[in-house]
Length: 114
Length: 111
Image (cartoon, rainbow over all chains, first blue to last red; front, side, top):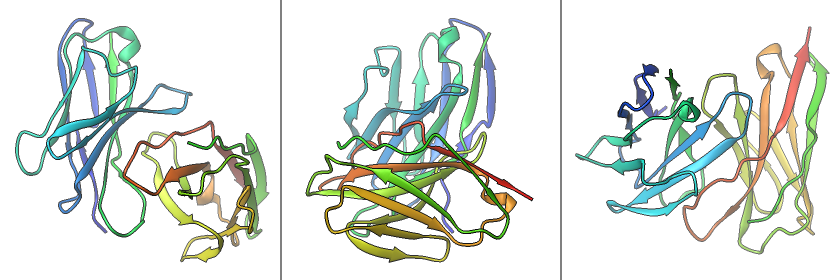
């Protein structure tokens, strides 16, 4: 079964540092997403991406965040200057066209800001 | 997007059938009902999706009555490994838009 792959699985960073979270979506999917989940809280939408541009973003996705698809396979989330409250699980997801089989999520990156 | 309401938690025992009901009184004509499962420290996993009547796959069944104001996810003969959080979502069918997750239903399966 095709998978969405995320790296690293766990990242610890100091407040104010930049982090890049990486994702490899399913190869024939065209829509890509980032979600986050703070410990014990709901899964929250951050951003959706299609045709090399942002389709929609939430209020959480402020100027500190950016996304990029640098090549044909990777999809990245960059946080420019991390804050303590950015500590969370970050999930990448992708979806295809045509059939309605839901979104495929990766296993996540646990980001810890200290 | 329609708001969905589901129980916060449920308990069951191995081998039993579990039915989780979700209310979505304001569901729009173009919305599908989708269910996801999430284990601790893992991403949500798609279980099943439907529009009306009954849908069945290898892991679950989904019942949606004609008025579509509610739906029921049925898990046949649960095992300990079905202990997870289950989310009911209304998803717009006209595009590939964001998913809005609620708190979900925390299912605990006991031996």
